[in-house]
Length: 112
Figure 1 (cartoon, helix red, strand yellow):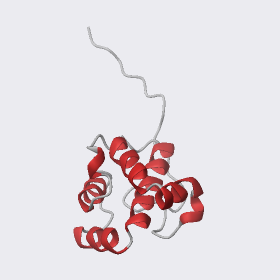
Figure 2: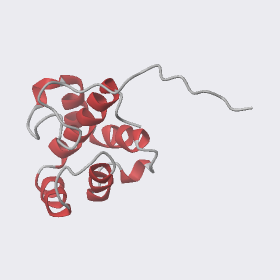
Figure 3: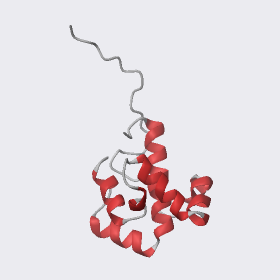
Figure 4: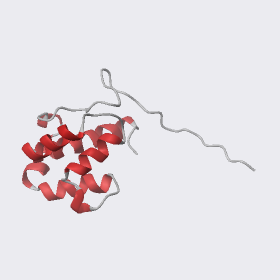
């Protein structure tokens, strides 16, 4: 006997956003002040939240590899070179952008 799967949530997209783009800019701290404050004052905690959301080791949350892994999963969001430069030059902003993107994609129903 086969079971039928019922779709209860349809993926949603915000106007002007595509799945392969970052949902917020690198310096867009005002779009989610809670994430920005967490990234500023408790960077390791935010790294663990990001890693947990992606089912990875907590120690990996702030790495270039985590950003590259995230970029690969939902679509093309840049390159490994841009991941490296962003994570090395502005680690807190890079991690906050990643967390904001995860939060937004969850709201739209397009994040695993």
